[in-house]
Image 1 (cartoon, rainbow, N blue to C red):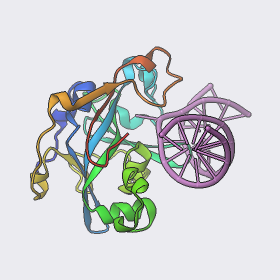
Image 2 (cartoon, rainbow, N blue to C red; image 1 turned 135 degrees about the horizontal axis):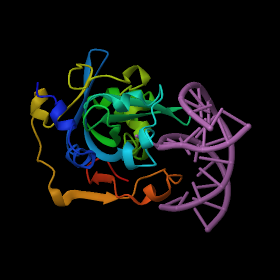
Image 3 (cartoon, rainbow, N blue to C red; image 1 turned 90 degrees about the vertical axis):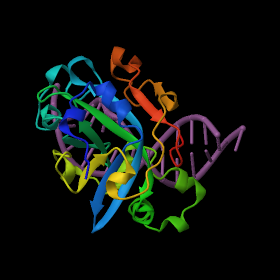
Length: 212
DNA sequence: TTCAGGATGTACT
DNA sequence: GTACATCCTGAAC
């Protein structure tokens, strides 16, 4: 089982955010395995980034996971209702992470559909199929990720981890992401972040069920 | 198709 | 008390 390692997550945050596109987030829930191709990410770099919860080294009980070793999870509640999953990057004590903003299901479609909408995939309208996992709150909902999953070591966990190929979980692999297929833009929902609103740290790939 | 408004809980001031 | 790395619904076009 080739989980992505601490060395991978220890790289520069923007590098990791781009490299995670096309990788697979694997989730075990109720004895079932779910796998989602990562199609949308954002980089957050605490030391220089006013949009990062740990900007300037701001260290509280909530932001503590951002200071953890590379490969840990940082899950927080947003707007009172939704969770967002981040993967901690760069060496320990440097508070940086990649937010997973969207994905496309590759394994466990019916379970994901039930977690999101309470009905199997076949019962979904086209709009709901299109909107299955195309947002950070939706991704967590569809994979049953909550604050229970905060501060986990994803390089060791068997409940939640990342692999670079479907072959790593016994499925047929699909083509790698071509560098020219990666799109770049300004991050979303951080209008308060002054100069950081212009940092081009939003990345996505065109992919089935990943329409924006 | 886009748009406004409301839901909702926690962290931090 | 205020802000928040969001999502859904329903109305207008």
